[in-house]
Length: 246
Image (cartoon, rainbow, N blue to C red):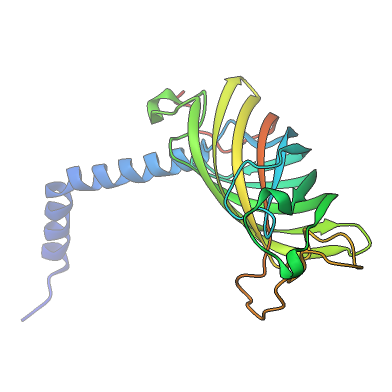
């Protein structure tokens, strides 16, 4: 069998012509995907502040997510990767209080304990928007409002006679709303599982809530810090990679 270059080129030309609609569809989908990623947001970053309430859960409160509301607030910096995903970094201050009279737990020798302390946190969370979040690019079915899920890690420090310093794992839900160009409003509730049990024990001496039952459970002897925060952020850093079909 002899190879004919002329015949081979003719066959390739016929095949390309026959399937040109498929190739056009493929190229169109590729362009749409590229544009969707490129117009992730009109701006890459957000910066702003948050204020709300901080709550504690631990030996003095094991079930109530909103017991002991105390003030809290901080700064927020967000990097928007696309319409669905963002990375948020926050620096926060808050206060927690607790009283064993508010719990049904019975401690050794029927001891009681009451505390109040401030704490500081530096953390980061990945956010997933359930709707493509933006006030632009209507052809992508964007929405000015979107609920979102977040999860991340951070570091908590609470000064005192017994200083607490530990990592935390966070999980939360929120809603964000683009009120107008560059201005975003948000509200979110986050629970944080701390990697220690002395968050509710600012005192070293006497009875406190640092492992009050003297057991060795690595799971049970951990505290939680929850926050309910309202935020206002401002967009900046224009996204240069944009499709012009707005």
